[in-house]
Image 1 (cartoon, rainbow, N blue to C red):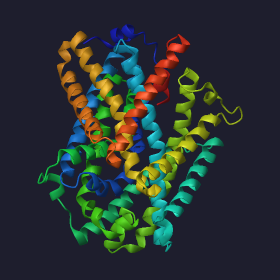
Image 2 (spheres, one colour):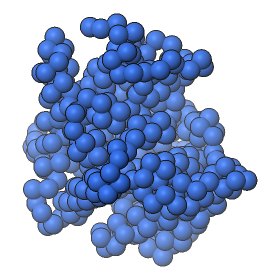
Image 3 (cartoon, rainbow, N blue to C red):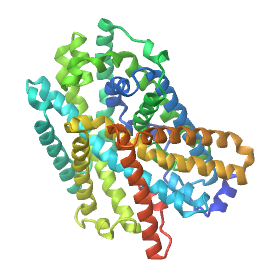
Image 4 (cartoon, one colour):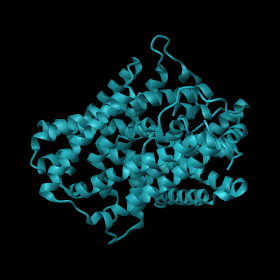
Length: 472
């Protein structure tokens, strides 16, 4: 393997900046940006909706696939020391334009889904608070729409004024959820027990539902692809990249497992179907009903902070794509007084409202019903980017670095897994909401990639996709 200096010379990396991030801080940023606090309070019940027969196997497959992607990213990070991000790796090592633009389209559509998913998830917990305050109609479609509009307007206004929720505000609120949710889970478990069977049971195995669960659970690793950039900004990226990526993936294992062990029975309760939140149900059935409202208020605050943070990021993401020419250049306009991309922020705010409403219309339900589907849309969209980077890794190993065969194995495994769940979603055409959603995501990625390539051809010059990695 080439030395750091040799690898840097090969790709023309300039001298690294003076300020470096500690590995511990990079891991902390990765973990809290994935909102494991709120995830702990809901994922166990929701994975039972997608994979009721083999939820434990679904978690295992998802983690293995994400570790495969981590191995691939580590390989590229070693080749391109001092720079990070899968777009950078694909653009430099694929030798072709199409893979990089396809991955860009996958990431872009994934972040659009994140906008809708975060705002919708926030509305679910706000609805839960109102529901437990006696506003039973809060779960209805009209109330849901009003709540969704208010959240989208408020988050957009905050972003537009430049009062971006700092990472650490969102992180503090997100982490504050964890001990409270764990305490409520303990109270619930004392009365109802811990259900180990879903973790290891393979009875009635069904590949279709298992793969659907993998799609949904992969959304638990929001922003995983951006961690390569964080890891590359540490003192010893060659050693820290695998540590940081693997640590963040493995940190999700106890969250998903604990959530499943405790919450699996809740998916089939009448209260859950009526619109009550998982955390609230656990509090009531655990003998601490007085915590039903406080726990949902705490999670709502965490989700609102996350919504502002994600929308602020999305504004900068869209503005950067405008500045390099992939989106209308007007999106890159920055407010001279507040330093925010005001037009891009408005577009992000509009999408955060339009996406959940459009999804609800597709499902013929309320915006709250769109929560799970938008979470899966993140997995479907980012899956294409992960397929591309995994296949590029296999090709690079085969052509230039044959001694790195474990990377090729990991890349082939990850690519096969993500291709399998993409194909599984597409195979039923437009017969179900799940399959329709997968076709919409696939169509969006293909059309966006074609549009980006067309823009590049019209311009006649290469577009700097690595600038998008810098935003991530």
